[in-house]
Image (cartoon, rainbow, N blue to C red; front, side, top):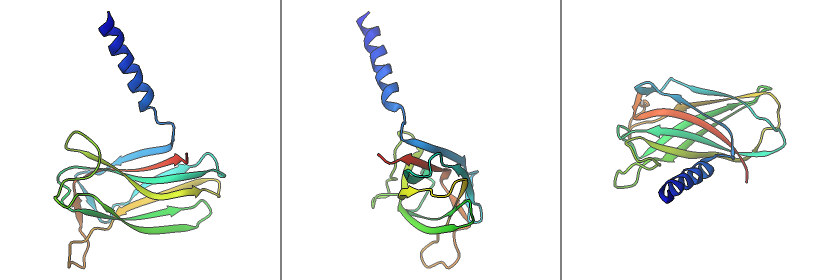
Length: 161
């Protein structure tokens, strides 16, 4: 009887601590086989409160087929009234010994990458966030046409706590 109560207590604790109360928007889109340099992953976001600050993240899932130690992304935010902000971002994806960064016990690693913090969405309406890869091999002028190892691209908005 005590073991049943202990198991039930652990399950309830896990459920309580796994609730994500900070998330305002959290969506992933699958990348089929490879991420082509011309493929844009888009998210349409309607933020509920135009007066509150939010933290923004790019989320990625990758496998051991990802062979680079870093990742370059171009992230574009299109505002409802036409304003566009475009950023070129670099993220570290592996330790110097080649071990992939991120969380996960399987061969898929999940990375929550900072994009912007304390952002106030001052315009009401729908924002569009476009993400594309901008990887290049050292010394190569042309970009990596088909990036292997990225399985999902996500965008996340959290309340600032």
